[in-house]
Length: 225
Image (cartoon, rainbow, N blue to C red; front, top):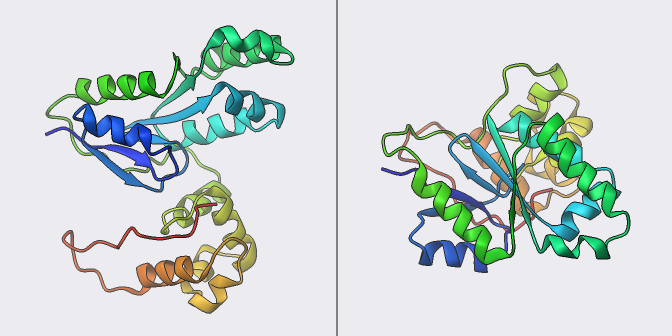
């Protein structure tokens, strides 16, 4: 049985809708990093404008590094008409970044013309998985991590907590244990954590273990990070 394609809840609705039309089994939830996950493959989707803005703000390679750290097989989908590169300021920097990703960072970059082609690429990827493949977990811990990275990795396992929130929590409470022991009221005082998210975190760390049949509700309204 094929593993479902995990789709980030912040992706445009027309992409998961199209994936369903194409027969792809999907599961929509908040994920970070990445926009799509299929087993060991973590996929970041960027429009040309997103890519260029990340490059200008010097966040592109940091985002790619997080993707590489989280998943054994990172993949970048670059969406848009490449003929429009001439309209961007400093198109050479854009092309240089693409070259660096492919050659230096060894992160494959697939180009698609629009969201329809992106959905088709994701469909091909989903259909090409081995039928007998094991069901991988969503998060993949790399082989070597610094202490700080290991601490953030643990905290990122909390509901709707990405890298930024994990940093905020660790900076506020000082240790992983203190984060896990914090009350909902204490959690609410952390930037970008509201009452709903604080309650969800507290419920996870205090709930008795009930085996594989029990799961948390995924209708958290706060945004991740």
